[in-house]
Length: 359
Image 1 (cartoon, helix red, strand yellow):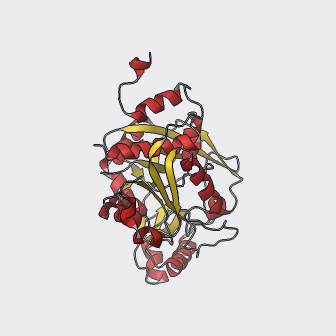
Image 2 (cartoon, rainbow, N blue to C red):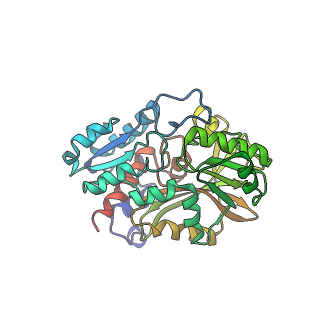
Image 3 (cartoon, helix red, strand yellow):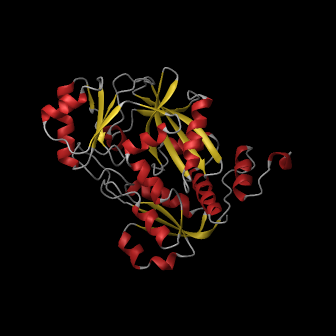
């Protein structure tokens, strides 16, 4: 029976099989390399507003949790929170595997810098390359990219340099309220409050001007999509999908949203009203489209694809190849529902990454 199910000789496939059929509990197959985690170590956020530009990244608690998980499955482990230390001794890491999780302040290229450095230094690293991060970190471009694969998105306008109230207000009239308004770059709900849904053109214009003033970057305005919020959790490469599971977001015990969004108040300050459940709302047709998008990147090893279900069809919100990987997120929830511990999830991700360098 074992031979019947295992058709791929890779360690990853064997390990996945053993987890699936419960042959392994907390048994760890060691990553035979030093794993170097480069991450933030921010203080826990107790207060924020739409002007904050540093809401992304791990805090001290999540950094500790992730570090312990990776340490338990790796031959050797190093935690770096000061990028200058890494840059000053970059070639000392040529035999190691780098796990970039440091994003710094919100900017168009903040998430692509470390992958780009690793590419330039010919270092092995986990996750998408700089190109994948640049495409996905640009919310408007990511939606254009998704449309090439037939994935639906909300009608939207990108305001690169808002000029004045009247011209913005007039331009918005090609869209129908309510609107969701957000900075075009970044994640972690930077610049996105639970109250960034506007129900008329005047309030939308006012919020757009505020966000541009605070963040000095293009502002995306899109029509609000009501429906269930889902996240497709993907791991694999540009040849095949190794893990694909759908998670549904529950907020304040609601699973259908007609005016709510998930802002920094919920993501960063108090997530006690958030829950997840495994779901199967996305059609197989739309899942295939999302898988094709994933495999269109050259180096793309994991991603969280966020969207809303409207009239039975998936509508993309964001592509996140840099999603949060702590033990309280949707990504781990999907893995845990299949029997993985946090350590085993990281072993899956790192082993998948190492297979990229063995091709």
